[in-house]
Amino acid sequence: MRVTRSGPCGAPATLLADTQGDTASGGDRALDLQLGFRGFAAGFHPLLDAFLDRHRAQLGGLTRIADVEAFIACISDMRPDYLLLGATDAPGDLLDRIETASRSPHLAVLLAGCGAAEEGGTPTGLMLEPVAADADGTELALVLRALMRRSRPQAMVGRSVSGALELDEACLTFSIRGATVSLSLEVFSVLGLMMDAPDRVWDRSELHRLVFGATSRNDIRAIDTRISRARRHVTAALGHDPIRTVRRVGYALVPYP
Image (cartoon, rainbow, N blue to C red; front, side, top):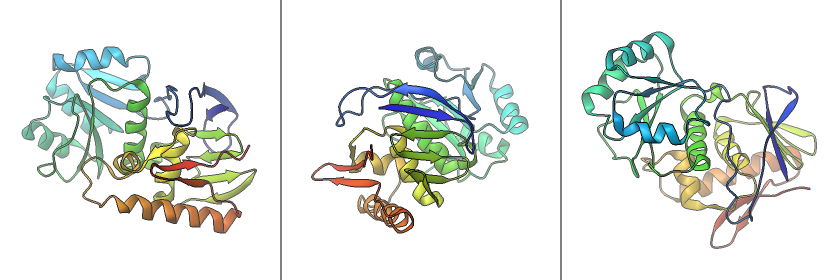
């Protein structure tokens, strides 16, 4: 299967990657993180250097800023889509300064080197999401893109094609064999994630973590409810259910060759 991604609203597609591996693993396909995302990395802490070096090729839209005051000034003046901090770079006073400088209602903040995010204590204007220090490129891409769907969906400007399925992120439309339906942000949060790795069989807990965020207090059944709404919405409009249930595992896209 060839997966393509292109510019907004029907621009010609360019090859993103070939999917590899079986449907259980989803392969190790690298996702393009340069689709309209502009971010700043807190380069004033050496523990983040190794993470940045490992993902330098993928984080092409990220600017490393080595001075704390310059970092805060850039947040205020340039309104980034997201920030990248080291897990130990984010004391409460820095997060408070970031929230004050940000003019976005929910600025996305990735915490690298953090296996889980703590509940509570987060400034209300920030949306924190952990990513493990040893995360591979695909995991980083999935986490960042899922975070963007929650915090700044207008930054999603790509078009994904997998077989007969097509998702236009900028126009918020989903197509099966050329028939198209408009999506709500709620449905987009599910189908957008699944189209990022269209061959993957998704574990329910993994879907829940990426769709709602690692610190969400929603019950695990919330992902079943959201999946159900997405299926009903698309099926009612297009006559095809794009998602199948995988017993004792979770969910997967229907390939529609």
